[in-house]
Length: 505
Image 1 (cartoon, one colour):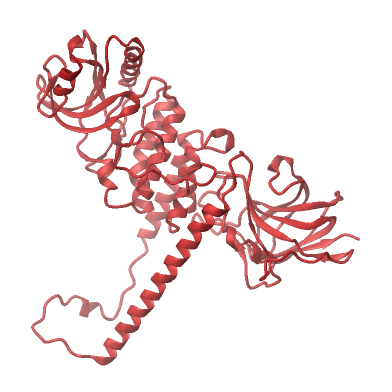
Image 2 (cartoon, one colour):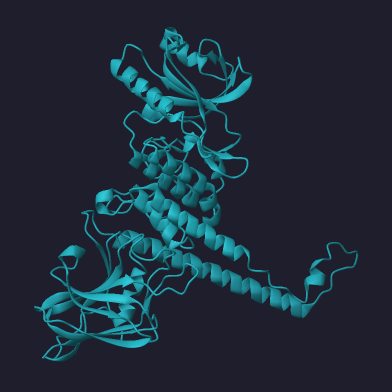
């Protein structure tokens, strides 16, 4: 029986009591032992999408799982949204499926015109703006379904198609029997990751699609570590959608939609900027001429200079990208659920500073970016905040959404050669309005809730001296930013040029 079944699942084969003729296979979801097909409904003379659940009727467990999938698809048939293909019918052995077909269940949905998602990214990742525009309708569908108490099963790339008007749509409904709403959120994050990187970040992906790289702790590498031009918020939301909610993972699709909407708004505003006109516009309109080209030596010299500059810039970008990626893998902490502290030694020789006098300025032995989401901002610049040079700086990433939308804050953790008792900290910064807390910690990677606040301040443009409360000598001091400086238009970013630590008497 098994061999006969597989012989039928080929283009031109007929299943479902002879009603559906298979046209082309769109993919397979091995987790459900399901094949995804475009077929022709012979009774209604229209194309449909079939999710065909294969298996042996004698296997009670497999049959029960298939029944559960079909039931969940039937419940979802009442939900209508442009981001989900409408379920037309569900079939089970004895009700539309012959027992000898070797099919445990089948979900019939309307056919989605367009292209496969996997084909869309076959030639490379998409720009951030295009990815957000594609994903928003699917995200809205998932959010609406969850409010209705439904799970869609949008967690496999071959179940998704791109409509002819540029929207992602769940084309093959039929959630796994054990799928929960969190799986839809992970699926949304994985699809965003796929659009931005061309790689799939969840188990059970299709053959031929590269797997997302992981760091030393097993967590997925952020998209902007692979492509630094990507917005931090978009990269962060893709990774956090995949993480366990107990360590900062995103729980709902609403949080993803908020970032998608902000990115789309930014893209739309950018599109309104008029192009720069030039006095040579009329020359550019000449598309054909019979004159021989002039041998303009000056113009040729300019061309070679431009080529040289472009080549140098390209080489610089390649080297910078290599440093960023290597730094990401080497600095990533081991998995343990705690914060990330990416250390950057201060000073040109990387040596710890000598023990200072009993009172006055004290130099930390090392400093690093402290982050609770494993997304440390510009970790390789941290030492610039203590290099006694106000012309250099450490700067946070730009966030479209202010804290705590994607993370509760970001900070600089300084460690000293011996425990110190500080009287004050002076921060030099141009980021007026940035809110900071000064915290002491017992260890470099202490959880935020185990640190103690000993001072707070709103930074001014220039130097801000923060007088500290009484505290025990400590080896670790955290400058924790809870609110970034906002300059409007979705730009939330702060910069620290110098931090001066003053020992108490």
